[in-house]
Length: 431
Image 1 (cartoon, rainbow, N blue to C red):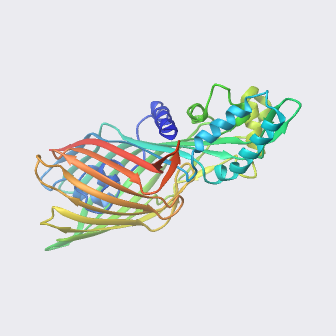
Image 2 (image 1 turned 120 degrees about the vertical axis):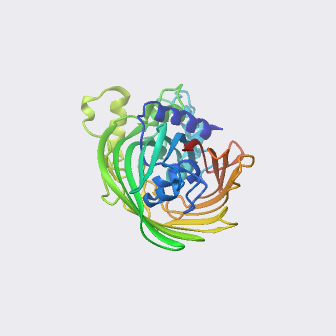
């Protein structure tokens, strides 16, 4: 299907030029399905709540590390049927110079009736994350648990800026200032964390932790006039070719803090992330157009034309985020019912709002012959307001596979498809 092809192509482009590191836009590893404070599925729990490092490595272990602890990708589409196909049809029509008056009027009426919904609600978004091999690395000694992590995350988003179509009877063409709007971001991260109990009594204890994170963000965006797209290209090619236009690289540091109250049969945790709220800049668009030529100049003037609808100079702030989590345990600790909720909404690098509510049930078989199992539910309380279900397995105590799928759908080529889907695969060890 068209949107899947776009997602796969753009994902390859995003990661082919990327160095490693960053906060995951697809939750890393079992975090995709295990949505609360149960912890011990994966060393990656330490990257979510810094205090969780205490539970992410066994009490008797000195080291835990990822061989390739997570590689994941996800995609999301807006609630508009056949979004990318409709834009491809419009690009094809704009390439023609033999349109009769009656056909021209029919095309104008057809596209003008759908441009508003396409622009307002239509988009294709792809996001993913990769851990550097061997990371995260957890080390336990008498002081507590130290964590070193390195990873990369990336996003790309394609939307539409709409302008009415008209028919030019002299050139026998249809004309419009409509344009594709592409935003992309890649964040490289290196993080150093520490966790330890600060208070305990029989059957209960309080663990605190912190993480110092260095972030390097490469952000880009581009406005591409549909009339400037080559006749042999479609919207998939536009997204692949434009994701790295006007890139701007900047770096900053931030701090996360976490605490977990751990009792015999339950845990409650709180994470305060991105306390310094670091800023990262996009490359500017729609300025100094006179020094450009060809399609680059055309696209530059098109961006300037939309200056009342988009920011030509933009900064992304990694906003503070508070997350409350908890879990109850049953079956002698083998089973867990866990939940977490973000207490505020934040913008991701491409500008979409996110505020997640997550619930999960998990069961650890404690045998290599049967995989551990986890099933989760997630709801974005802001932005898209999408909900999804997920399932994950851990094989042989080391290999993780997690997938998620939206509960909402849209139509593509006459088929109902989920609006979002994601998967993660990883391998990690303790010794």
